[in-house]
Figure (tube, rainbow, N blue to C red):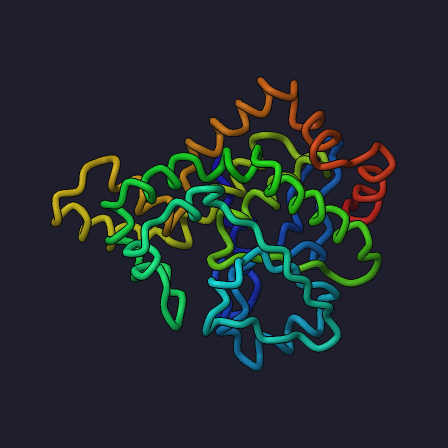
Length: 280
C-alpha cells in the first residue's frame, strides 16, 4: 500500500521546526471507522521547535508528550515544553545489549556535547556493532523484554490521557516512534497494509538525507551492508520491519496476541482506545 499523497500531506502538522510531525488521524481501520484527527501525534524531537510550533501544539491542545529518547540523545537537545502538556520520559534503547559492548574508542566517538545523528552515519556504516544494531533494531524493540515493558507503559500512558492529544516522539520520529505508531494502529484495528504504509512514509521525509550519505559511503567503498546502516540510521528499513511483524506472527500467533501478551492490553483496554480515538 502506498500512502495517498492527499492523506500524506493532510497528516503533516504545520510545525516547520519539528521534523516528521504527523497526525495518525484519517487512517481507515478495518471496521470502516477512521482514526480521529488531532488526537495521536507522532513527531521527531521538539528541541528545535519554534514559538509558533509551540503555540500550535498548545492550541490543539497536546495533553501529554512521551519522549522515547535516552538521556544521551537529549544532550544539548532538550525538548521545548508545551504549555499545559505533561512531559514523560520513557527511554527505549533500540541497541539492546550492544551499547554495553562498545569499546572505549567507540563510546568516545559516539559521545559528545551534542548528539548528532548525521555526524555518526559514515562512522557507523563501517562499524561492525552498528551494522548489527541496524539489522536487529526492530526485533530488539519488539522482542527484548526491557523494550516491551516500555512500550507497554506507553499504552498505559495513552489510556490514562482522557482529554487532549498525545504526542510521542524519539530523535527523528521514525524507528521507536514508528514502532509505537504501528502497535497503536494495530490496537485500533488498522490493517497490516496501513500499518506498513505509515511506517514507510518516513522514508519520504528523509529521502534526501539517505541519498546524500549513501553517496558518501559508496565513495568510501561501502557496499550493500554499509548502505543498509545509512538507511537504518537516517530512514526506515521497511523490509526489516515487515520481517519483524512476520516473526511476531510466528512467535505469538498474531499482532493481536502480541498486544494482549507483552503489551498487556485487555479487551476492555482495546475497547477504550477504539471508543476514544475512532470516529465514523
